[in-house]
Amino acid sequence: MNFRISPPVFRSEFKSEQSRITSTVAEAAVWLRKTVPDEDAVQNCEIVLAEALNNVVEHAYKYQPDKDIALELQQTEASIEIFIKDSGDQFPGVPQKKPLDPLTLDLEDLPEGGFGWMMIQALTKDIYYSYTDGKNSLQLSIAVNSNADSNH
Image (cartoon, rainbow, N blue to C red; front, top):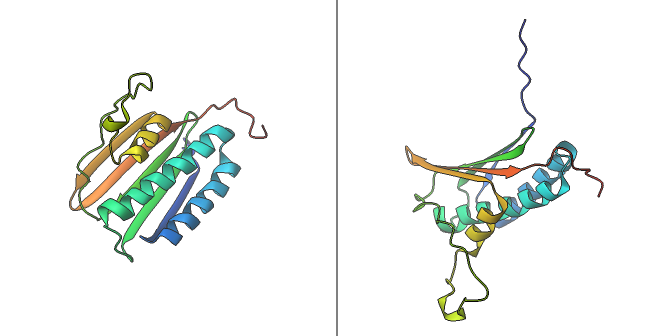
C-alpha cells in the first residue's frame, strides 16, 4: 500500500478588510511558528503575506469591503508556498526586478510606488501569477532552511 503524506496546510477565507488581513496574518504566523523550523523564513512570510494581501485590497478590490480573499499556505521541505486567490481587477503583471544601486541612485528617479513588490521579490524565490475566469491567482515561494533552529 502506498501512502502519500500531504504537507502541512493552513487555509483561510476572509473579507477584503484591513482588520481581517491583520488577524489572518497573525493566525498564519502562529501556524507557521508551529510548523516551520526556520524563524527567518517565518518572518519573511509574514512580511510577504501582509504586502501581498494589502495589494489585493488596494489594487484588485480598490478598497471595497466584503470581497472574498482565499489564502493557503503549504510547508514543504524546502519552502513555504503561499497561494492567494481573489476575484478583483486583473493585476497588470508582476513587476520585473529592477535592482536599485544606492551609489548611483538619484532620489528624483525613485518610483512613487511599488516598494511592496520590491520587498516581496527580495524575500521570495519564485512568483507565479495568473488571471483565469475572472480570478487572480498568486503563488509565492519562500525558501526555508530545514536545518534552522526555530529557537534562535
